[in-house]
Length: 504
Image (cartoon, rainbow, N blue to C red; front, side, top):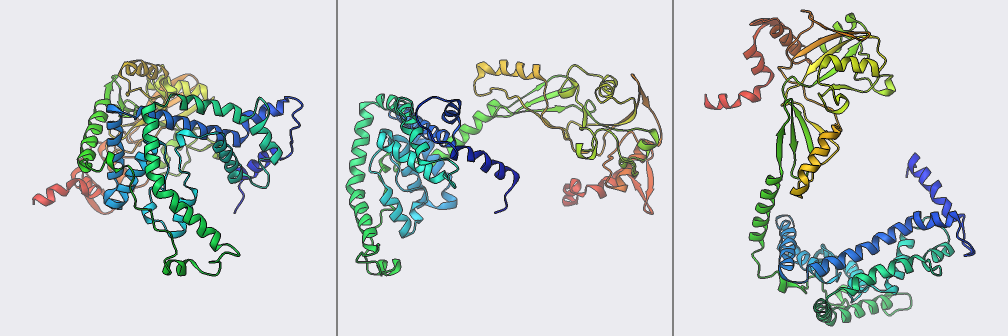
């Protein structure tokens, strides 16, 4: 594997753990750092937090409307996959999800109807026969051992002494910190749910534990010195020596088998779409439209000719020979990367982004001259069409909670940020040109510089079109052929006229 800079430094950082062995005599700064920052500690805290959340979710789903709603959600997530994976798969998936969410019982996996024999052995021998809602100290000990084993690499996590000190240190060990969190959640599990879990486990264990024992015995028989050590997997199967399969058994189908599965999928999809639609909205702020998605994401759409992209040259001659009019003079401001010695892109977005508090293009050009220490320059301004611009911003609006929507929108408007700048070229964009000298800005009007049309720099025909419509020509020549605005657009964008061709 190729070692990148990041992996090199990661390994170097991880080595800090292997150099330290605790003696328990004092609480040093390093010990405090370890207790806050060792990756095994973060992983273990996250795991226990997951157990606590699962318990709370199980309690919430234990009865009444909450349970009915959760069953329907599980059915939907299962039967959403029926066209891709088939009925048998989704039935098994649904059953396992009910077991895990309602009772904390993990058995198999969502793909367990397709498992191979050796995978079924692994599933069965690792089946605990208990609910994860009732994890105890021994279970957490096993989790800690597994986390350390899975992630240890060349002792980069440190010694076994460090591992035991983190976990078992007197009064301050991680286990003593985490176990009460689990016990607090377990203490509020209702008696009715405890009884349900007990009954469900009895039903499952009557079937599964004897088969688990058979697989465990088969492991012993296949080991060195066992009676099947010289018999391969295929021969064991042919001789009928495998335990009977359990990968298609269902243990919680009383919750979902009689429901209208596809009907639930359709209804919940319709409800979800209606909810999304109710959360989407647009708000007009004069020059710009605030467009809010169903998730609270926000994008700005500036109305025609209110926002523009700005690119600059040091001389008028350079601008007249710029790439956007087919020339070769490189721009000096507004597009070149930092690596090329340029500055960042320049966008005039009135009152938003860098333009917060600025609504006039000439004022903004003065601003960028001051900010970028430009004494004199010539700028091309590509004015944007609403159809082609769309600027996302960092802040989100809380559309899920209507009582907070207005407040979060007001905060967003106060911030006036823009995350990303980009806009497609349009066939009918307007173009303006300005000269900045000192603190004075003057607009340039010159027949050599087109003020209308698409100036993308990639098509000479587009440039000929731009010069023609900028100078009011009804007809022009290009590559030995006469063009009109209509013939050019039909040739440039034939897909826009497909409906006419079908009618004819």
